[in-house]
Length: 276
View 1 (cartoon, rainbow, N blue to C red):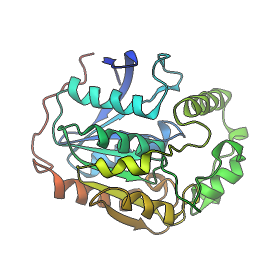
View 2 (spheres, helix red, strand yellow; view 1 turned 90 degrees about the vertical axis):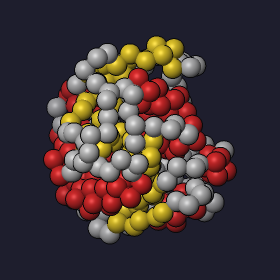
View 3 (tube, rainbow, N blue to C red; view 1 turned 180 degrees about the vertical axis):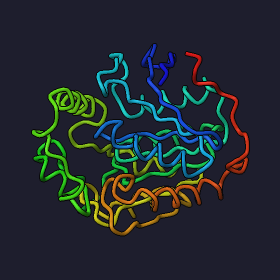
View 4 (cartoon, one colour; view 1 turned 90 degrees about the horizontal axis):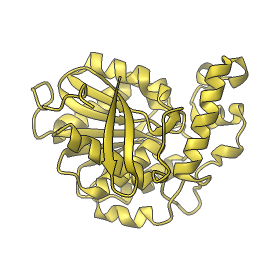
């Protein structure tokens, strides 16, 4: 784990905590509102299964990391991660984002960084679709959230009351950071129209059982992005990286490989994350 200092327009100096594993095709993996733990095990699994260099940053404010006052929007996070790719001099990057991480990835795509060869939005939020609202995350009980998030909530749902106090405190802090960035609605009414400006290859992946945003919502997301592909994963909900991790790896890797300017498995990066 390293802390990288970045100067981001509108946000000032941002200290970004990033974990890296594996070697090969560079992958920037952006977590959702549940925090970094929702992608940690999958990042390990991905880096073990494929020749990939997987970078997993913590959105500032999550896991009690510092968040500058000027960094208070999804667009600001997108600019932060574009700055990270520049600072590390990465090329041919695949950006993967789940939930609000997918929203961040969508905003990154609109910034058109030449360092990115593909985007994968996994059960992303952010757009508004008539008749298919995003679930009111902040009003849901833990059991209600699990029921909407998982194909198999009995297996994968978590009862916060049974977790250590330190974990519960971190979850509460993450919830606060999520509201700062995404608002309580977790949508931007301008986003769907703006996505017509995306020019980089994009894949929208959706869990068939997702009830945070249903499959019609996912298909509308893909339809808003010129040329975007849409893949529906059976037996999974809002967090495929937890319920069907191997299926997600194969889906993502196939797309990343197809759109890579340098084939995965070959040396394709020069950035060194150990230098802050």
